[in-house]
Image 1 (tube, rainbow over the protein chains, first blue to last red):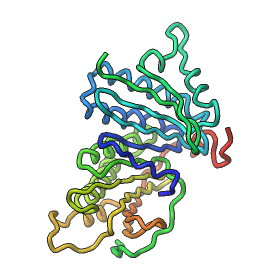
Image 2 (spheres, rainbow over the protein chains, first blue to last red):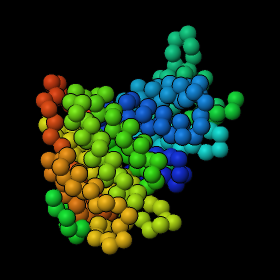
Image 3 (cartoon, rainbow over the protein chains, first blue to last red):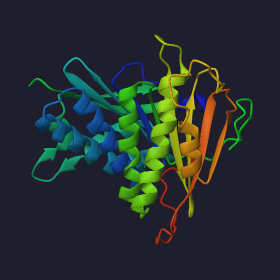
Image 4 (tube, helix red, strand yellow):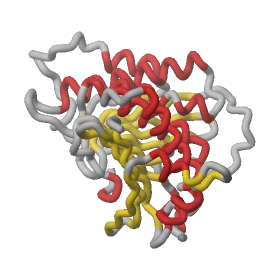
Length: 135
Length: 159
């Protein structure tokens, strides 16, 4: 467990996932998000939408991922769930968000998440989507 | 089956999947479900996949039950590395190591069960002194071309 990968989740209902092989990114991330969301009593419509956001991340994040892997931190808290994906190079998170644009529908992530932000630390940028369960 | 907790294990290559969660009973199901993704993405025989998930469940249960003193909590990390004909799964924790316990709450069947399901099992310490259970499972022929399908960026860290 190298230091850069030991993001031990501090929140009880949370998981840190790291995937290095392309075909596994979407199935692993969606399965973990589904489990964490279900345990958080997320309503089924919001669970579906959380999975759509996860699918968008899984589709676009690998092409911009630093160091050959995609990381996602999934954490539920009071009435909401954060999906944090990265690490990306500078402006990489914005590019991933922009690529979630679907013709005729708009930006999937921005439409489905309650709040979207870019965070950065020494490892790189991360795109964070908050899915609220109480709309 | 190597059963020495002082056995120092050599690091494996960058895993294809690495999952880190609090070592709680409910998270065993998360690991089990997440590892089902292996058969979503690759043609792994169903029975073999069931064996793998059972062994991973047992190893994670050991972490939840034995790794940390009652009332305290720590991480459980599970990683998987797939190559052409084998799957290496490593379950790690930050507990004191695997030692005999006269007051063990379990039946002691977990490790023998893992040993019967996996080709090899090693118990020991990783470089960072974490306790590690390493299981290797043989796989049926995958039927793919074996091409490089790693996430873009690779080891160059470009981007």
